[in-house]
Length: 124
Image (cartoon, rainbow, N blue to C red):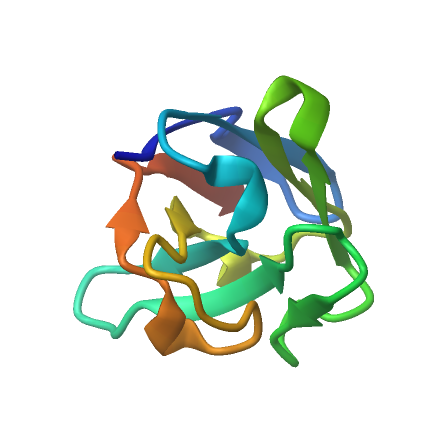
């Protein structure tokens, strides 16, 4: 069974950058799609970015496209989310996710394994 542990969250100011990391272990993590989601209280979880096993396929939501970059390091079983030009709208709990039963990197419904989350707060 794949397990995911996020790190890298924190408090930053508008316009700054932050890089989230996710350490993946167990199962066949290098053969499945990985992704990042985020959620704020009272709102639905938002699918932010996804990446296929070979890193050829990448998905970004419209709200982060051009600012965020998803990257995976299969040799070290790591997933990253580079977040640039952060705004207050990016404040949320960020979750690393895996498509444990297979499925496409661009389909939010594919993801069924979750980390515990890391908080990102962007202050003005």
